[in-house]
Image 1 (cartoon, rainbow, N blue to C red):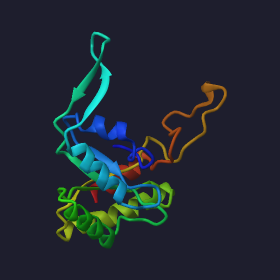
Image 2: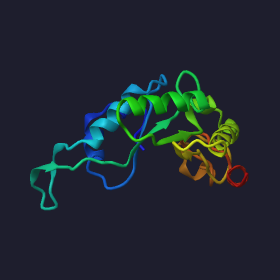
Image 3: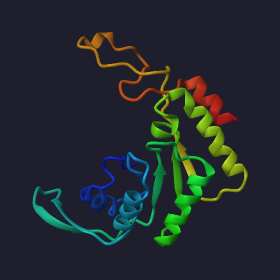
Image 4: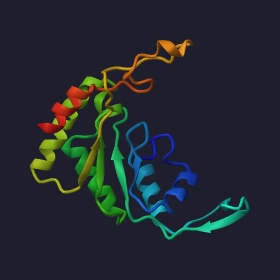
Length: 181
């Protein structure tokens, strides 16, 4: 996945065009879709970029474009996982002649950065799929062994095992229960 702050990066778009696997582009931090849609268009096209060969020589690399890109709705100023937001995203992708593949990030802006809310976001997304939505291809959850997160202490011996050092996460039992519903 290419993050909300990196989706505009030409380097990431060009590199994504040469990857032979699915690449998701998150909507930007305010919730807008234009940047992600433009990123998919760029990554789907033939691109040339400068890099280094296995022998250490500078060379131009040409890609054939990546047909496996999708939007990741991560929320913004407001959540954007609800059916009306998914439908708006589908419409934007259709207008751009891009396959309507959408992943929902249950964390970040969609959970208002409160990790416990991911479960209710997932429940809403699951209902959309059960109700017939065909464009939602997956979800992202912030999950770890134990819930919450922790700052990195000066003394690394104080790091609590199984607790995230980045974004706050739901714990494994909550993850398993949410996915089994």
